[in-house]
Image (cartoon, rainbow, N blue to C red; front, side, top):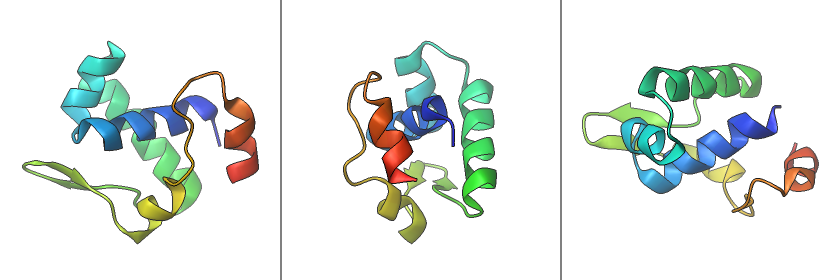
Length: 82
């Protein structure tokens, strides 16, 4: 899995919505959504549940979140988490 996609996932979870994550990253919402879709396709499951008030974590998303790096330079964690 791509480290950048995992970091986008972390931002979505922390921000609480795709739109807020896009603003925090300086990206467009469709770009964030595309990264999330690709990560979910790689994981083989939905990692967030989208709803009108933002996102929620299903069980699969919660499993991947603990220990997720807070800084982009911690790519080693990404490789070891997978």
